[in-house]
Length: 260
Ligand SMILES: O=P(O)(O)OC[C@H]1O[C@H](O[C@H]2O[C@H](CO)[C@@H](O)[C@H](O)[C@H]2O)[C@H](O)[C@@H](O)[C@@H]1O
Image (cartoon, rainbow, N blue to C red; front, top):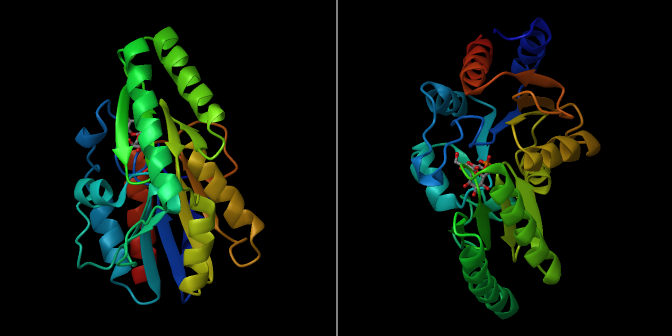
């Protein structure tokens, strides 16, 4: 497959603007989905294209991910002194802020309670895996038989529903339970306003990215966003590409157009 003519035309128009924000999700967009989250690696070409874009005038580039900031930097290979902005934990962490994520006492206590209850859940669902992040725990079921995965995800959702202060976010073979939540949509619109972008490019593959696409479309400052869904799921994005390799082709097309 190759990029649709509509998408190429939209990229050419976008590339002509003076100040733009180019943002992408990480897992399922730059890096193929794998069973162990720490085995994830970006496909060749994506990160170099983003870094080159970020070195051009009037071009802010951001990775906007559900990942915690540390693993996002490690797995993407983004240079800590480089030009890329990293937004982690679905908007709750930002590489531009020195302070990191501060939880209050109630949130800390809830995170500990969550850890205890998930330990019990793992005894009932032995295949379930738990990823720890600064403000959340993620229940992973990739690779489990369908009925076991469904039962474990339902149990995680029920646990989340019992604690009303928890924010429950389903994703691809995951349910995330967070004691502090911002959301990709809020983070993207805020970043676009911060850098006074005339237009935003955002690419994502998961449910959390749909919130991003919708928030961009709803805000008058970002309503012209060039949104791209990766994969064949239902989406409110304006365009789509098939997979991470087409994503690289798209980023390279944008880079060439912006270099003029
Ligand atoms: O916003 P993203 O960058 O797409 O991050 C979303 C979640 O990505 C990770 O989970 C997903 O990728 C895993 C590794 O490929 C896969 O095993 C899992 O099934 C996917 O849902 C990450 O582990 C989560 O913390 C992120 O929230």
